[in-house]
Image (cartoon, rainbow, N blue to C red; front, side, top):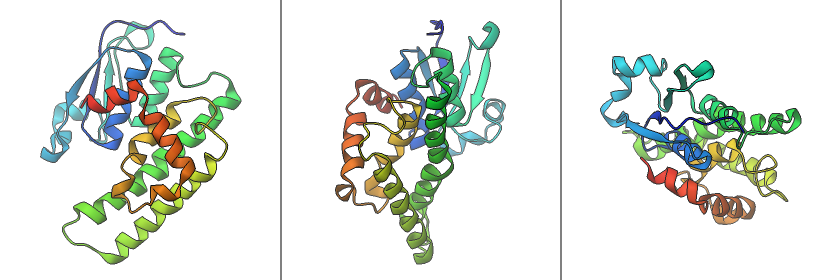
Length: 211
């Protein structure tokens, strides 16, 4: 395992599925951190100071005072942050290439599809000022398709890619909001079992409560 500094990592984040991922990972790794709230309801993600940390004006982003070569580093995009922290600590991100490819596949499946599609489902079902039936049906249908992919993947597996990994951390924060997504989780026994298991982890509970 790589050496871990005692200096806290600043986590610029908010209480959203993407925002929860990083405190969960930091709790799992035992790294010290402090939450720097970015209230997206007040558009604080567009503040000039935050743009320096996150060029895309999105949470989460981190500032690690002990980055490569002992110099500070900023990292934005949740998947990139999870990979960075996995490499930094040697935890939840395998070094074996075949195992790492499997983790990366499911990590990218989440950040490119599962998260964005569920986010659109949340928006059109709950937050959009105008309820557009076509959009609600389109994204609810896609949410159910993606949960079907997850259900098949977890058949006979405890976790998404071998051992518990950043792929699970990345996915669980979205899956725990299934009740907002028009998905009948009771009809998905593998997903239900997996979600119950990962949400029972003490570090996951601490990370979810940190924001």
